[in-house]
Image (cartoon, rainbow, N blue to C red; front, top):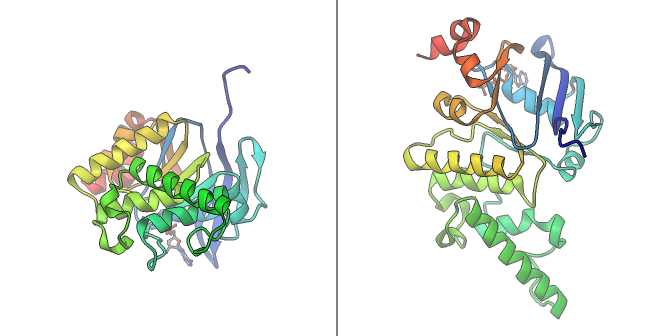
Length: 258
Ligand SMILES: Nc1ncnc2c1ncn2[C@@H]1O[C@H](COP(=O)(O)OP(=O)(O)OP(=O)(O)O)[C@@H](O)[C@H]1O
């Protein structure tokens, strides 16, 4: 191996239209393993549409490559199986299940189905379930969700921990590339610090992370590179330093936010 690897996720000339409205036009970016790509832009700039395009939830133009292989025509659930995972702006939980059961459910690709519902289990099944429970417990802790919350329903745990849970559930049993949509929304103080620590630890584990974020301090401190969208078009791309001193960006976005 040369040691130089290509991008984990690459999108080329992505475009999305809703009727006559062009929400995204000719947008190209890529992210490597162990890298955090930030996507910023004013409200309505096309950031979420970009994720919808990547994960094939909308009709779109352009191409998507995962680990160098074109996956443009692959269905959304098959993209997830191949390691392209996404967390949404709104928390998405199974509300009738506990935090632990939610986690076990997303590990079913690893341990098989029926883990939560099964009651009378032959020995092998019981062991499979024990392994799944322990795995789920460890994963929750790793994503900053203390054991005291594992038996509660997701809506009964603090909001900051709910955001961590939604990232843990999106990541599931593992991902090559993870798309996060405003993970810092509604967070403050130590929740923000926990989120930064989590993003950095995922990066250190060689995950390719893409993060849409309005919280400038957070994204400028964790991202390796930034893509700026405005009115569906790619306005600028570069390191946080380059972006923060780019007059076009200051004019279009950062200047307005101050
Ligand atoms: N399903 C849809 N049908 C019609 N128009 C849509 C749809 N989804 C988004 N749009 C429009 O497409 C444009 C881009 O929206 P998008 O949600 O991608 O922007 P965004 O940058 O994610 O915004 P925000 O920061 O507010 O989440 C906006 O003008 C929006 O109103």
